[in-house]
Image 1: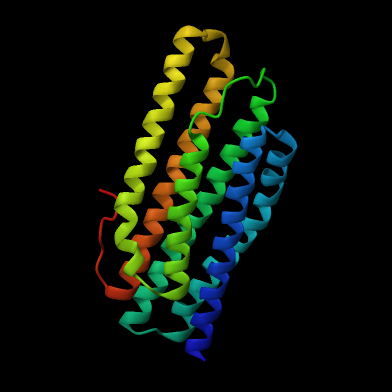
Image 2 (image 1 turned 90 degrees about the vertical axis):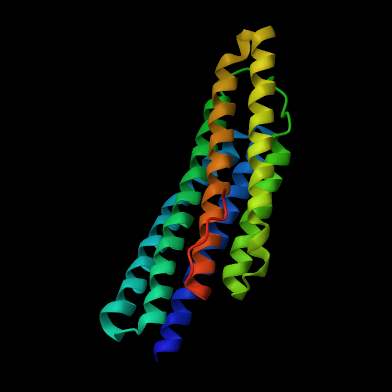
Amino acid sequence: MQTHSFEQVKQQIIELAYMVRGHFLQATQAFEQKNAELAREVTAQDEEANALTDSVSKHSLSLIALQAPVAGDMRTVGAYLKIVTDLERIGDQAVDMADAIIRMDKTDKTLPLFTIMDMADAVKGILDTTIQAFEKEDINPLHTLNDMDDVIDGLHRRNVEMLESLLEKEPQHFREAIQYIKLLHALERIGDHATNIGEWTLYMKTGHIADLNH
């Protein structure tokens, strides 16, 4: 009974992970196309993710209340709750991306994409790595997260620098540039939350807390 219940909660977390991943990918596509309608779909779907988040959190807590788990199981439940929180934040950041794209629709939409799509691809890579590590309970790929996060940070800096350089020459684009900055921040935060998920997966399997983002 206990194993089945833990497995049920794990499957719900996996469902939530792929749900918010889908919202992130949809927001990324909306930015690439500068498509406000597609971005509005992301914001509309957030309520479903929030409902699933609440359900998973309650089911995780019920494992403690009803089944008197041993120390190893308590560690798993604690990791589950932390991972759910980071997944919820990823969903929130996808909405922040969508909101920036919707506001961008009120501008001339003339700024280039710079290398923001490269950054989005890097964020997708780190998110996929951590989701699959949790799903398969395979911690080996998690040791690459620090290098992956460094790539994201470097692309973030590069895009901000390119924006600043362009605005020095063409300050009339500042309204659109503000939304770019918000979108870049959201992408960076999704990468950070994905790294957190990796850290909690590692803790769940080993009992050690590691800083994979240093």
